[in-house]
Length: 87
Image 1 (tube, rainbow, N blue to C red):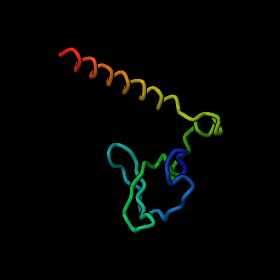
Image 2: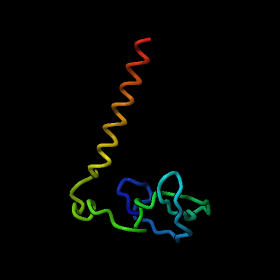
Image 3: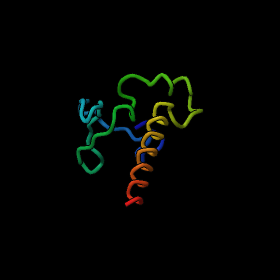
Image 4: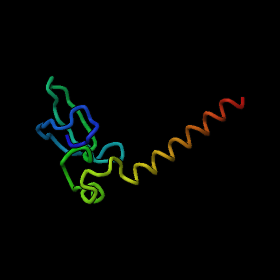
């Protein structure tokens, strides 16, 4: 697991398969208790290395594309909140 904020960061698991589900590639593996787990492939060392992550070399905590998505989500939540208060 390579995602820096994931609780299993640094843990290694045996790869079962990689499938496209929920609009993204996900890695499937069994955890320590034998439960089937799946995480986005981008959170692992499976597949291609993200170009921004590679160039940033650990100096940036967030990718620009992820920050843009976050801003969009926050704006949408604020609009919903303002709509609820107006009733």
